[in-house]
Length: 140
Image: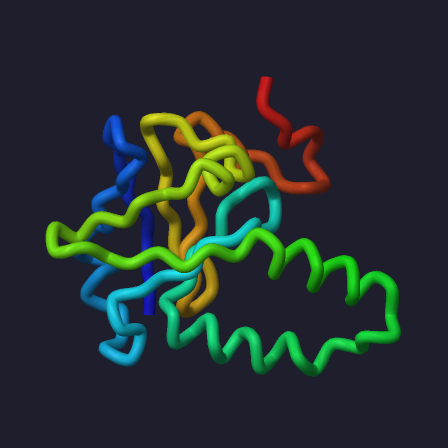
């Protein structure tokens, strides 16, 4: 289970060192692979590979005849990218994912749900201080 948050830096080659506190909770079944995709609220969703497979099983139950479900699935799956954790515990963040998440040098990596990490560019931590019914949560 992922708990807490960590501020990380992208290096010049768009690699991120996955913090040990998150790394230790990735099951061996994930085979040192993560899946990154477009998440909710302008973030990048990060799944260990084994959890991604379980998520796909859950998504398979969505109604393919419902237009909202189809659009969601298309958007969610279109942006999915498999990333391998290298021997120095880094993942290479593809440029498409950097654009989707608006990621900059400093990244706020937060635990969300049980096996889901979310990334935000660091200044967007303001998002956590403003709820959806308390005014705008957009960046200024």
